[in-house]
Each structure stands twice: as C-alpha cells, then as structure tokens.
Length: 637
Image: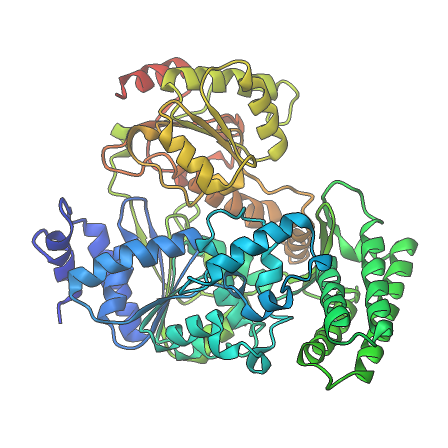
C-alpha cells in the first residue's frame, strides 16, 4: 500500500494521474495530519487556504485507511462534485477498489407510494401540477436512482415535488407497500455497504439528531468523519439540536387526511372536518403577522392576547383531531402513521410555547404563506463534545475560513472542540503579485443615505475597467435590488441578478458571456468557483455583520452579556470575519489568476477592530485609490 506522502510528490501517484500536477508542501502537510488524526482517532481542525488542494489531502488518507469513512460537504452541488469528479480521480490514482456511495436527504428521492396516491385523481391537484406529474411519471419509468435532481426540466421549487417525495413525517417505513422498491432504502443500503460515503451537513445532523427514524445506523458504523466547509457546521447543527414546527406541516397533514378521506376512508367525514379546522387555525395564526416575511422573538409574541387565543384554538383543534383518528386506528397504514404525526405535532407545539426554558432561543420566521416556530439551543458545544467522545474515531474539520485573527478559538468554543489539534495552512498563491485590496477614499458612513450613490458610481467604474467579468456582492437584498435597478440603464453589460433564476443557471450564463456582471447576496459569497480571467474583480458593499435584529443572534448576545463578556467582540466580529473571508475567496482561485477586491466600507480604516479583519484576509497589495485599481485591471488580459 502506498504511503501518504508518496501520493503528492513530483513523480508520485497524483502526478502520474493528473497532467500538470504540481506538488504543494501544504497539501502534503495536511494529508499527513489527516492520516495521524485517523490513526490516533483524534480530532483535527485544518484551515487550508484556497489552492492548497484540501479535497485530495483528505481523500488520500481516507481511501488508504481501513474501515468506513463519512465525508460531509456544505451543499448538494459540492457533494456531487466530490463524488463524481474528485473521488474517481483519487481512486484511480491510488488504484483503490474501495466502494463509494452518494447519499442525499429523503426529499431528493422519488417516493413510489406517494406518486401512486396521486394516481390521476385530478380533483386533488391543480392544472400546473398535473403537467409536472406526467413529466415525473415518464421519468420514473427509466430512472435507476430515483434522484429527482435528474429532472432538469422541473424548476427547483416545483409544486409537484412535495407530492412525490416523502418526509420523515409521512414515510411509512417498513409498512410501505413499495418498501422493497424504495429508492431511498436502496440508496441507504448502498451507503451501509460502502467504505466511503459522501453526504451533506444537513443529512449528517438529521441522522445524528436521530430525527430521521430507521436511519440511526449510518454514523455509528463510521471509523472516520470528515467535514469539508466546516465553517457552516455550528449554525446547521444548532437547527437540528432544536425543534421547529411550520404551519406548512399542518397544511400538509390536512391535505394527506383529505386524500385518504376521498380515496380509502369515504365514511370518515368527521376526520376530514377536524383536519380542516386545524388547517384553518394554522392559517389564521399566520394572518396575525405582517404580510412581508420577517423574523421575530416568539417568546415576546406569545405575550400578545391575539396570539395566545389563536394558539389555544390550534392546540384544541389538534387535540380533537387526535381523538377522532383514534376511532379509526387499524383501518389504514397511512392513517396510523398520521396518528403518530399528530401526537408529535401536539408535543412540539407545547414545547415551542413554553416561554420559561433556559439556554434556548424561541423565535419565529414568516414566509409569504407560512409561519415557522423555532426552539434553538444557544450553544451546542456540550452536546457535540459528548457525541464526539462517545465512540473512538477520527474527526477532521476543514475549510478555507475557520481562523479569526490567526486563531481557531472561536470555532473551537462553538463546537466544544477545545482539545482538538489545529493546523493553519497558508494559500500557495502569491497574493501580493496577484491581487489588490482597495478600500476607496471618501466613503460615506455605511448606513448613510448617500451610500447608494457611492456604490452605484463605484460599481459603474469597476464594470467599465474590468469589461464586465466581475461579481458585485451585497449584504442585503434591498441594496442588491437598488443597485441592479440603477445599473440597468447605466451599463451595456448583461446583468445577472440573484433571484431571477437558480444559482447554477446564473453561473452558467455568467461563464457563457464574457462581459456579464453577476450581482448576488449570501448564496454567492461561498461555494462558487470561477477561475482565470472570467472573474477579475469582486466588489463587496460593506462588512457582513449579521442583522442585529435577528432574534437568534439577539438571544446569543444576551447570553454572552449575562456572562460578563462583550457580545460584539465574542460573536459579531468573528462571524463577520469568516463571511468576509468567504466573499474575498471568490477572487483568486488559481496560481495565474489576477484580480481586485474592493470593499466599500470605511470602518476598515476608521475602527479599532479593522485590524482583525485585515489580518484575516490574504496578504494583498493595498490601495485607497480607484485610479490604481483601474490601471491594474487594464493590465489583466
């Protein structure tokens, strides 16, 4: 068996498999550290700067180690790239025969039972959905995997998807008539037999929190767990360690009961009526909040008389529904499953309306049509530490953005990883030669009214100097829309604006048009890889501090205050630094890339915390002059 270091040398296995492969000391250092963590069954945290080649640095040791490894990535796109592109290259280079599997969450797989329930009973679905249903049916005849991602013709939010996929709530498990042919079951079986399983963080934590019944067997089997894009984990894990309940779940419950009433239990009209009462009570609860989507403090909302009245109506409605279903138990497998769901909903609602709990935040968010209630723990450190110490195995957490001001303390504290080994690896790129950081002179205060004009004028100059080929990244949707609207009449370049179509479609359009400009918020700050001269300029509107009226952030800040610390320094600065590093990381992706990062926020010059941000960014040449920026952009061919 080859040694880890022999994979990465100038005449090693990767050099033989990949034309033009260049050995990088940082890549070998990381691979050796990962091997040690897996051998010693220890935890390792690695920040690997862009260009280190971290994916191969952990895949090599994982493929050479014995036992089962789970690799978890931030998004489905990265998951597919890792599974379909990177893993096969590494397996081939090592001549490895280890079995690999890709596993997604259940919402990605066709549910044959749910599809058969909508077997052409057109009164239950609207016209648009009927068209989508026939698309799904013809695809279902040929698919091998049942992965709905293969249905490229359907929009990402197609209304048919909830009708033909299952949730933890409505899955019948082994009682399902289609269990033996179930695509989800097949994918899980394949994963259980594999040596290397590629999942994403949401699926990992759903399994870890054992919310996903009948699927607690994957993680216990693993000898090694590797998280890529590990900076996302604290927030994702917090969601799964809490509780949430949406009025959409109640709506779907009522819809599922209605389907049963119309098809199997035609004599049970009391069942349908009591489900409808719950649906109306949930919809009325949503109407007590403003029409525009918002987030707020649920504990405070519970003090309102109108909210209390509606909650007790909903609670009573659920109690009645529970009793009515009890009368029909045993008549139908789907109904028996709904009985369990109603019981769970009743318990969740009770927990979410108990305002006297410590160590948690109760908050809500609204969409156009629904209300979602959340109970989120303020810290997951203790729970996660117990989970890590429960079974001896190797743990690796890696990302290009984990350190703040040269240290891992912020990440370690949030995750309970105080005794993990840490390794910080610089990017091999020559940033001083390749890039310029500019904070323009004469910037108004970030929240002043004149900031819109400044951003518009700056964007216009940068677009002209870079002939398109730039990303304009914003911290708010409102500012994104405002600048997009103004630029529409001011430049001839194609403007690609987030929200008009899917993220992947925007990226494809950007790469196809040499003079396009992409305007995005959160989604484009990370996980976007545009190399070479397709991207030579990134403008960021301001430092990405989280909105101070976010109820979960407020609860965490109050908690820090109670302990006598400064919440701005302990929470807001570290989070903003990591987000800014992600945005800045879009620019230089390759040893030959050149480009300019322009941050339009004078706090990078005037505030005493500016040094923390600057020290965490790559070491680029710095300027305050847009003239210097324009000259540099003109030199890039």
